[in-house]
Image (cartoon, rainbow, N blue to C red; front, side):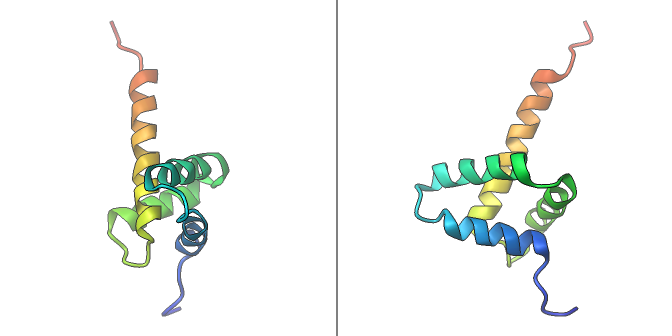
Length: 85
C-alpha cells in the first residue's frame, strides 16, 4: 500500500506530538519510558529499524526518544551481564 504510514510511525508520532510542549530532554525520556513500558517488542523493533534507516516520516522527538530507549537498554545489558570472572 503506497502512501500508508506504518503503525509504529503513526502511533509514535501521535504520542510525540502530544509531548512537544515539554522540554526536549523531558519529552524524550518520557516517550522512551512509554516505549519500554507499553509497546509490544515487535513494534519497538520495527520503530528502531525505521529510526536507524532515517525514515523521514519519523518525528524528530520520536527518533530521539527511540535512541534514548536504546541507550537505556544497552546500559542495563552491560550492568546485568556477568563478568565471567
